[in-house]
Length: 536
Image 1: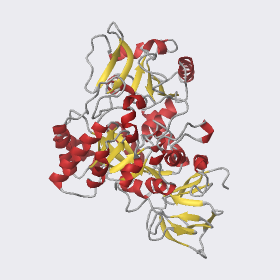
Image 2 (image 1 turned 45 degrees about the vertical axis):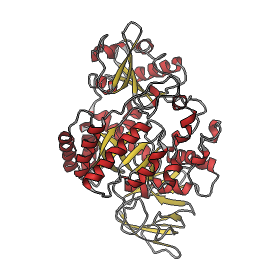
Image 3 (image 1 turned 60 degrees about the horizontal axis):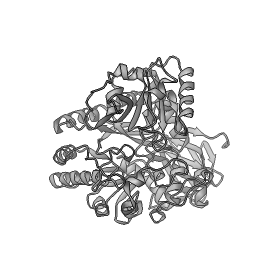
């Protein structure tokens, strides 16, 4: 490849040794040099026109394959607000995709839809003769139509699967609504998409990520299905971003079983294009279906939920996986889930000693103040999704009543964690919510929805982050979270030539305009993988 020079640029490198530059030279797939003043010559020259250049962003908690497949194969329900609108979207999708063996929809919003108003009968009205399933925006809940219930064998009297629930009516008949691990129970019994649909989904997901300036990800739910698809495209040289994977650990796994499965993934997919580095635990569910695990009862009507892994089980699994030199990556929503995870990580450190694994606690919606300092003490990285730290102008946040006024200040308390010394990275959890880093950064800074969306008052504005913190958390720290900080996440000689050029300076624009930012150019391993039409 001929040398490429990017010049007349406002480069922020995220390298403390050389934080700023005006030109950058790419040789092959690596950064050869950068500096300020008179640039060197090169066969290919890109005039940045004074625009901001950053390292490519990395999303350290994104379901890229399933999100891309969702884009390619499912009715998009994220914006619908009524049953009639939901039915119209599903009916239109079913009519336009007659060849799909399973009609799918994704993104209905808890708070607008749920156990009380979304049932098989609602879907049957528009899809009576084909199996159908509609996922909520968190993918922790789903609703089947009657054809799907028949195929899955879901009938009255069916016992709940472990860590799952079949919603029933007053007569004990399943309504079609599923919570938590009832969803994969049903999906394993329904028609599968074709292999080509998943490949098309991954290509669509990568293109979407590249348009938004993302050149690296961590997919936090890897099974044989995801590993095979990522691995095949990596072997072909077809990935347009770095992929790390966190392999699913199940509540019925023994330490020996988990180690054997993850060890097999690691040996088959050593990277660097696609590597499996992490063990993924779902320690609890979500507030929306009351499966978040809390230290004290729910504030509205009481009740609670236990973590999905017992304490002895958590400690045994985490000690074994940590000894096997796997990173631990845990979904935690409630404060009891965070406490249980930290206790497991403390046991692992006591047994195996400290090493730079950077275990991840993802989401951290409600965290007890006593545990903020433990994140730093145990070397745990807070893997946060700041977009959720706002009062949505349209969708009611039903979790706030469950949390209650006494604990409200501990909700998405990111600054408290950072001030207590915790390392952190930013991520999206797409397709649960937008993948766009600039919308996420704006909310991290303002703690509000976008100005174009008629935002409500800021949510706990004392927990806001700075733009500098956000960019650091999306580049150098996200690379560290994905175990590739030795060659990505900064713009410095010898590092992979992964960088983005933006149409405005997010460090200098008004905070409520950050979300308007568009990526003019995305370069991955020295190749242009996205170029906006406006950037000739």
